[in-house]
Image 1 (spheres, rainbow, N blue to C red):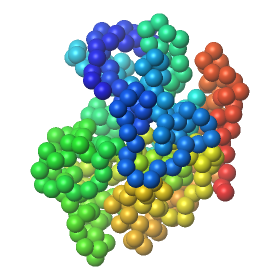
Image 2: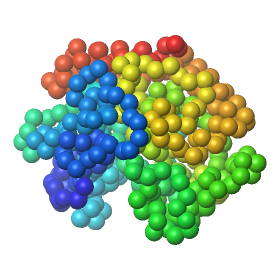
Image 3: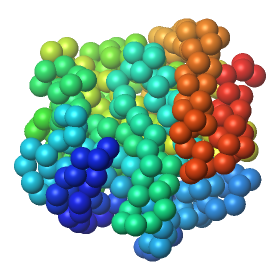
Image 4: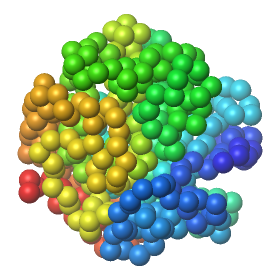
Length: 359
C-alpha cells in the first residue's frame, strides 16, 4: 500500500504526479501476504472466485490485472492543490459483483434516507493501455469530505479492519493499528468514548449512553444496514465504520462505509431476511462491544424497530429503491454495453431488486 506517482486522467483532464496506492484488505487477497482474520468466517457464495473465507469476486486480486484492483487516488499527494471538480480523493472500489449495482444503489439509499455518505459514479477505468473495466468510484470520507458534509470542526475517525472498538488505554499511540483520524487532530474524544463503552458498568452504560452517542442516529444506522443486508457493517469481519464526533453536541454518530457486500447475498446465495433486532456479530464470531451492549437496552431496541419499519416503508415500499435501481441499470445498459454483457446487468439488477420485497 505504498504511494506511487502516476498521471491520472479524469474526463479528459490530466493531473501530473497524482498519488495512487492500493486500498482494502481482504479484497487484496491473491497479491500475497494476506491472511484471513482469526475466528470463524462464512463460506464463499455459489459463484467461484472468492479467496479463503471471502465472497465471490473478492480475494482473487492479481497484479496482472491492475484495472481490477482497489485503488485510492489522491490528486494532491505530490502536487499541492490539484483537484477535479473540487474533489481530491477518489476510491476505486472492489466488488463481489460485476456491475457493483448493489453498492451503487446502497450508497444512493443512504443518501435518500438523509444519512451521511459518499457520492458514487460508474466509470471506465483503464490502467496504461489496457482494456477499460467497469468500476464504481466513490468519494473518500476524509477532511475535505467532512468539511462539506459534517458540522464545522467535526472529528472523523475511521475504524481499521484489523482493529476493533476495544479500549487500549489513554495513550493515543496505542490506537494506530485500530483507528485513523480522517478529520480533525485530536484522538481524545475517541479514547474517552471507547473507555466509556468498554469499562462502565451496565447501569451507568444504560443511563449515560445517550450523553455520548446519538442513539436515534445509531438505531437508524443499524436499521438501514440490516435493511441493506450488509454483512460487513460495524459488527462484520471488516469492522467497517466511521465515528463522527460533533464538537457542538458532544455526541458521536456511527457513519456507514463499505457496501460492496450489501444487497448481494454473497454469503448465502441470495437475499437474507432482516433480523427482528440487531445482532452483535452478524454470525461472524466477531463481536462489536458497542452493538453488543446497545442491543441490551430496551430503549435502543425500540428505536431500532421503529427505524427499521420507517425506512422499509420510505425506501422499499414507496418504490424509491426500485426507481434508484432502474436509473442505475438503465445507465449501464445504455453506456456500458461494451464493458459488460446486457444479460449480466439485467441479472444482477434483478438480484438487487429481490431485496426490496419483504420476506
